[in-house]
Picture 1 (cartoon, rainbow over the protein chains, first blue to last red):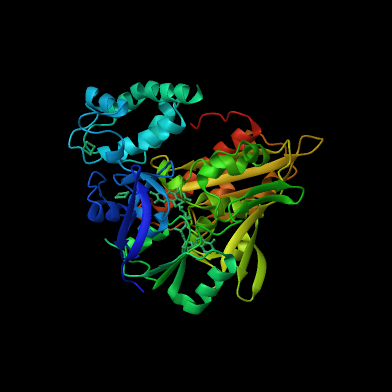
Picture 2 (picture 1 turned 135 degrees about the vertical axis):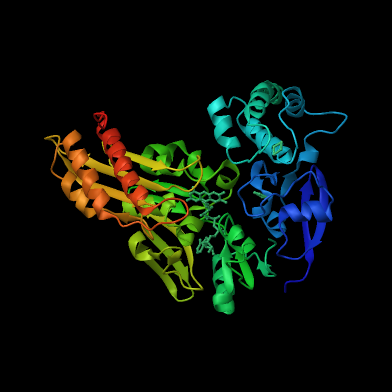
Length: 165
Length: 292
Ligand SMILES: Cc1cc2nc3c(=O)[nH]c(=O)nc-3n(C[C@H](O)[C@H](O)[C@H](O)COP(=O)(O)OP(=O)(O)OC[C@H]3O[C@@H](n4cnc5c(N)ncnc54)[C@H](O)[C@@H]3O)c2cc1C
Ligand code: FES
Ligand code: FES
């Protein structure tokens, strides 16, 4: 049975059901079924990182996960990080540091950095560089991206303090 | 490319998964983390009619350290290994090697079992398994078998796994406390597959002589392998710069890498010698004289 069937998950806090062929990747389901086109597809075989989304707290390549494998999971896409009216601290730092030019890689880098800083708000520059090595950016030369992520760390530390209180 | 049309099932138990594989014969394929299989499907290098997702099977996700050894479930991810401080103490060579595997997002999903079954010649996990005499547990319709990593790997991207078999766990022998060890590899970019790599360890006796030397290499043949000629040079010797240079010369001659788009054979051969020198120097905690 290769025909479409329903898959249920949570996307950016809201329950969603997509009816897709089993071969559909999570990235395609998000883009084509839910019209969450912030998640980009570059290579579609795991090397560029443009498709990065967060599944149960872990950054993953959306092109290397089947939609069906996300059954019951909690997914965060770039649309879940902030809105045009209310950019997140990370997004504001990207704007301030000009950490994007064409923007193709940006969603994948934002989701990757968000997952990283949520787990490791004290990540040092080496760690950030290592993690971002999994995302290709052909425009910026990476330096502004690193600077933005470094600056955004403080916002994630604040969140941790609040959670602890 | 988009994936070829296929069916997908996600069994809840190991026997169900094996039964599903058996029913479909060679047309079914196990999917674990999908970090090697999904690219193969996208390139249409693989086109199974059904994927059997083992990702939700219970009991394959644990790491346990006992008197018998270190047991790592097939579904343990690179991320799990990276975050296990106890494991890093119990097997520092494994932890050091796995730190080189893939990128952040891939590490969150890629599994130990998937890496062994995929059998990439440059992959770190199979390299450690071969170097450290790991034993693999495989379950199929006809029962369970336990094989050494050497018996398991039969060539580039090939193993003894039958169509209805699932690798469930891998056991590494316990690590000796004062063991000397090092892992060295070269990849163009951190997280990319290695052009070549060396895993090395040996023990030191009361006289300060090396014994029980294990030298394993990745990326220089169709599968990871040990270098018995190099081990023979180290065993019974005090490891100094002379011994290390001798060992590296033997290592260069012992391998016969192929040319490919990533590197020429001669480059890989030379690289292996350099990596072995670095590994042994680091293990022995000595600095080699600069090459002239
Ligand atoms: C960009 C990128 C970079 C990478 N870099 C590296 C690297 O530097 N080093 C490295 O080692 N790897 C690297 N990988 C591969 C990665 O480590 C994979 O996760 C791993 O090789 C396969 O694990 P998996 O769980 O994803 O397996 P899957 O992709 O799910 O499966 C791989 C194969 O194994 C079979 N299989 C899986 N589990 C089992 C099982 N338990 N029993 C029987 N058969 C099974 C499948 O049928 C399939 O044939 C990289 C991958 C990508 C996308
Ligand atoms: S589109 Fe997924 S990694 Fe390139
Ligand atoms: S901003 Fe263009 S690829 Fe990164």
